Length: 105
Image (cartoon, rainbow, N blue to C red):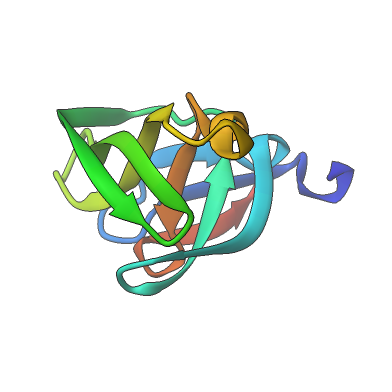
């Protein structure tokens, strides 16, 4: 997705930069607030406790992710997928669209 290489996704509440457009893998995910994006990497976040969650696509071990400045819950990190077809999500980040803003460098 080369068109996103000069884009940064930041926390809607405090404008803390969270992810690069170059790390955006998909815009086709859903979370509590609606649309969510899948990123290969995220920065300036704090991971919460590990927990097992039953999501639409199966059972996962996840950790909620929070903004390192304002503490806003942004989404989660996939730590483990129990279904082999979902293993590609391991180590990746879901960030809810409603919690971020797109900024251009």
